[in-house]
Length: 283
Ligand code: GUN
Image (tube, rainbow, N blue to C red):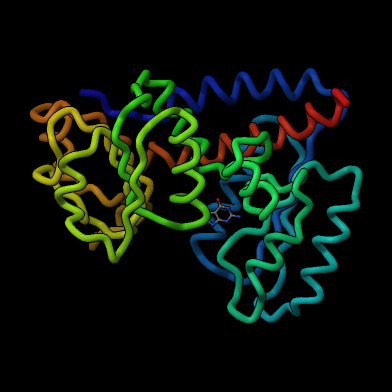
């Protein structure tokens, strides 16, 4: 049916976000804390900074060395929480094992938590209250709505139970009146569940994990993973060789990798930063 390519939407969104920034009295500012030299994190952070520049919001990376002490990171976060000139704070994950990821993530003030990862913001989402929402789940719902994919009353299967993707996404689908199942490594009869679902979201992290025969006709497939195949090419969980059959024979909707969900995550991050700034100015 349709390749849910995010590129056009990203162009449209960037224009809209630029206009919203122009209407603000003070430019929003995003601070990204990166610890160590994780290669993928370096790429993601660079992409976030590039998009901030495109939209016209201030951004800064605080790049800390791998061996940084817990107390030092704590102090940096607490100072950013207090800084009136900082709109949003993001601790890029993963961080080195000697640091307490849960504690540090939750130390960010709820209002400045652009990732929507704090206990306060995750709690608000679960209770159906307003708050900051994890950007990848937000981006998935935006992308599906952009392509007019019906969600209400649909059977949604999410193959991922992480705090960043699976759990917040389940809440967002519930809010849209879908019936939601979360699958994980211990789930029984996964193949049957996939065949029975209207929308399948996969964030497993394994190239070629899903093939065309796994899906029923007309399924909407959301591929969240960013993997690299044997040739070093970026791919998702769905086998690239099967895109053609899925789209043309099985009449499925499919988010491609690259140019699918990954593009949306950054846009939602920027939008959420702008939303925080807008709320602050309207108070
Ligand atoms: N690492 C992978 N995805 C994310 C994300 O959305 N936010 C942060 N902070 N770290 C990540």
